[in-house]
Image 1 (cartoon, rainbow, N blue to C red):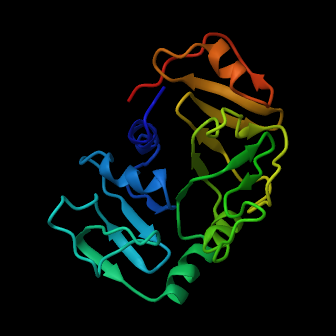
Image 2 (cartoon, rainbow, N blue to C red; image 1 turned 45 degrees about the vertical axis):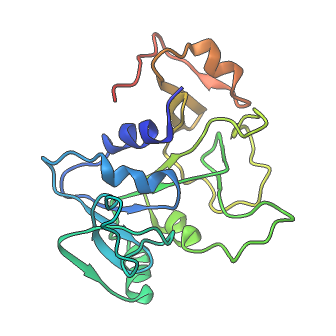
Length: 217
């Protein structure tokens, strides 16, 4: 199975030259560490940052420079800071080419639940609602199963939804899955993981078309 860093490495291959990319809280924030130096990408954070770089090395952090998850970050040359209203104007105006989010559950029709577990205190939905409502290209970075070993790749989400019919692709520690009109399609499998292992760990049905290749990290 892949580590969280490996999931971020795989997703970094989805980032294309010239993209504006929003990185959600959790695994998605790691993606900036692995994007190729040969392409130009602008990473955006909804707290009002454009031009994020990799995480700083230990001892080089600046507590005043943070992302939406309150993690210290670096800023690339030409990076900029602005208020949240401007940032959400950029998101709602569909100026972001790719949105990478974490999730607690994803359903076979592309619904995403990533903001609330009933009974637990939360500060609010944050920027996730705006992101999933506005973005046309959403990739989810998540673990395939929860701590109890239960699938988070579902026929139908059980948690309160953040967005409906919006996710295009999911990358987990076990697999890359595309969401099609007919449900989840198994596109790639993690190195050393069999198709049978993925089926066993998945509550939703999977479309399997021929031989499924291993992920290239």
